[in-house]
Length: 287
Image (cartoon, rainbow, N blue to C red; front, side, top):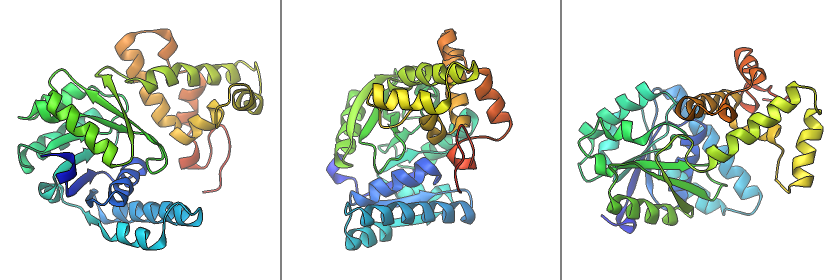
């Protein structure tokens, strides 16, 4: 199958990333099967998609008719078996290896053997997921960035078993979705998070040591380095629990202190201060 022949994509998980990926696929003209564990999770995902598209319409980035057509192309499901109708599957569930392994085992049984199985993981080994399938050559990472409808980058991650044909197919799919693909090896953090995590951890450590205020750290980066937002604002956007998880994965793989999560980050996650998603992180947010 060629990228232009893909008619239906299944997106497994409809949280922050999954709902965004479903929106991207629907706006690119694909039918989308959005799979979640229950109706409540699907409803939260639907609301997130509608809010995102409403903002795009307000900003003149999307025509109302295009929005309506895209929403109509998204088909919710609570049974993973619905993915059996897809030409492409993108998994975007919680960053838990055991849960992902179980999903990939079932997807391997449910979907035709020629269908590519992709994961949106930001840090986990792709080869572990490939190993539980009978199509390891057709498993790879398609790591979207938050928020998927806005961010142009898409990291393609090839593991030891991924075929060149699968990489070429995924690259063409990424371009069809309006993304700019880059290719990374299958090691923790890929390209972006290997560079990003030490930077964010350093900013958190700087704050914890009282070196500077959170406002001055963020202002220094936005005005001094030209970044669109400071590191502490970015950490809140990513989610401090996600930051902690990715830091731990990188440290476990490389044992380099630059990836070790700062004590302040660990304490904030324990307190439930997760950033924007919880209403409080380094800054406070109205939910």
